[in-house]
Image (cartoon, rainbow, N blue to C red; front, side, top):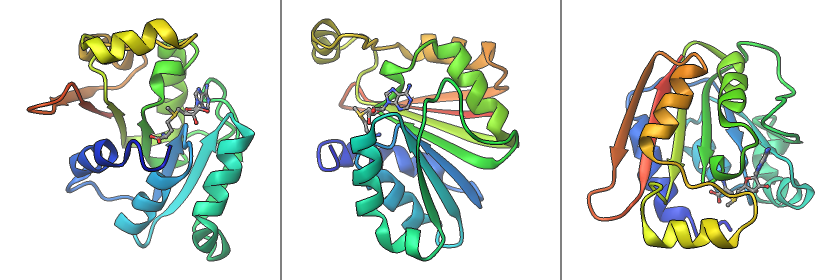
Length: 182
Ligand SMILES: C[S@@+](CC[C@H](N)C(=O)[O-])C[C@H]1O[C@@H](n2cnc3c(N)ncnc32)[C@H](O)[C@@H]1O
């Protein structure tokens, strides 16, 4: 999981240029590779990673054990539909290759908005733009997966209360990076 999506994640992270960050929520963290990249990118920030899978939590803890020991990283098991965080706790939330599986997109996005401070940023990064054949093949194979178009993501973000939403398409691949501001 950590290796497979690394190029997509690095392309997505480049969209955070110029955004000042002290508290990060990395949602659907999988193996924890992107938590590690974010901690490296923002050396004075603290990060909380969350995933509903116990195995992902264990892997993310292992990948980020040094940052956990240094008090910069916490890893929790939980569901994005009911985030175990106080309102206005973070200034950046990230979601790499995970919103396909979120239960009730608009409700989950409203949860993300709740835990962001005013002006906070939410980055979604998907390797499927909801129209590509490979993504749609996966959607047919994987139970509970939905490949959203940029327009569907933008509409759900706005309905959930995000004000500014910008999408970038990779020039050669069906990758999308959606950056929303609270
Ligand atoms: C395809 S993996 C991507 C993992 C990682 N973000 C990456 O890019 O490598 C999707 C992850 O989202 C997590 N996930 C799916 N639905 C979730 C939910 N409702 N709440 C929390 N985590 C969820 C899964 O457990 C899994 O670890």
